Image (cartoon, rainbow, N blue to C red):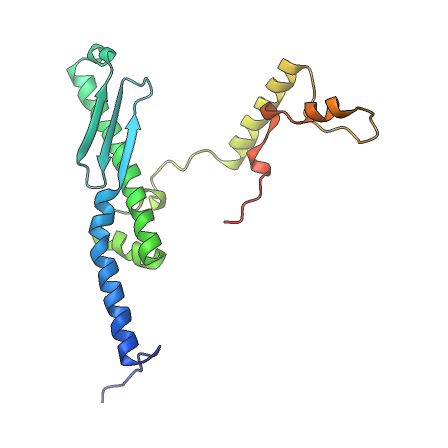
Amino acid sequence: MIEQVPVGGGSTRELIAQARARQDALASVDALMAKATGTAHDVDNTMELTVDARGKLLRLWLSPSAVNWGPERLGSLLVEVAQVAMREAIQASYNMVALRLGEDMTYLIEQLSGMPAPARDPQADTGITVEEFQRRREERLREAERRTGRTTQTQPDDAGGGPEDEADDYDLDTFDPAMLRSDR
């Protein structure tokens, strides 16, 4: 005996409309991925290139000093920079697709394509740890204190001071973006 499971969620017309909307959205995935680009440059700024999510070279700029690298090193450097640009383009394309189709469908496309989003790649460099960020922040604050001769800690309200002291409290050298609240 075959078990019947109700599809749920509305009338047949509504289900057909939803299926057509999904089909249209999926058809637009290829166009979205073709629009996504990534740009990267080397550390020395001797080259910059832009590729699409499929790896097609869209723009290449080489500085005159790039000739100093020699053919072997220049070739390998071009490949490395192109790979970084392509990862950026792939991530940008998945971000656009996720806005259109949602996170679950985008993850399914990643699985089917065999190209995971760089943000999900377990071997990818995830950046610095929180501890490393805090250590670097402390170093920056100490350096700012040394340069200005002021401490970055706020003083009590009764420490005197007029409007000019309030202006001194606003210092971009000591601004810490980690203090901002994130609602994401």
